[in-house]
Image: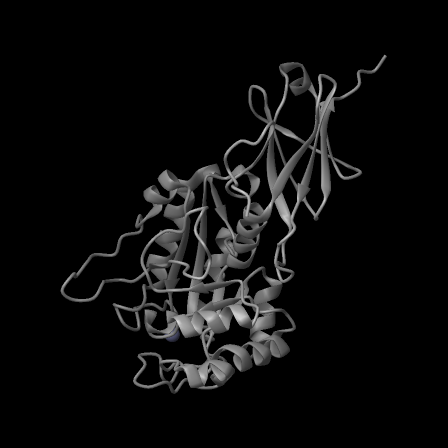
Length: 343
Ligand SMILES: [Zn+2]
């Protein structure tokens, strides 16, 4: 893989799409139908997409999983999941049975569950989400995820994800009313936000199904706390935060990590580069890159940037630096010059 963010000649790939400083996503394990009543309206109000991880073996059914606090609530059915996709959400596999996955079980929990879910919603599943705890991030589970064409696996480790991290141990921040004993805590709507800005991180919140009161204070927040979180993400993040569904973030991450930049020409009249993506996994669903081009001051007056045969609008980021976001394929050529003056 190429090394991404270090400037290579006059063309740099940004750490995150649109040149944003950090990224915010939120995930709801189990994909319970009550999300439609309590969480979805907030997502629509704030225009932040969400993500559900379905216990695939109980799709559309009343939950009966061990001694889960959520037993008796209903999991979403295929139509409800499709409705969420249409609103910009994403769907992941949260296993078939929600048990500890032994090597004998990986085919059903990782492979079969993926196929059933894909059939139900009509879209590829590229994310696995560990049920229970990080026990299900075991090596044999992650190997099965890779073999079955997933592009990432989400854990329950409370940490940020860096632009350079690999994706088969994605960290998530527990958005819960209170943490487990002995480290009791107070709900903190600022949790990890400042750090995400500082390290250019990808912050993924995780909870289950916020209601008027939390179903379990160690497993969820309330609807009011969820609203407070969104307000805080947006007030703290301003224009620096990219709120996005994990599939899009993961796609950008892989595009950046696989991009190889070749200088074709850096003469005084124009700069030309080629971007190769020789080992990009074919399952990557979104194929955009945000590029920064370092150009002479004179070209900043009205920069002309062409990606392939298309002219794309460029914005001035700093003196001598313009930025574009565009679809990129293997072998895409980028050209930057001054726009010819009208005479
Ligand atoms: Zn779960």
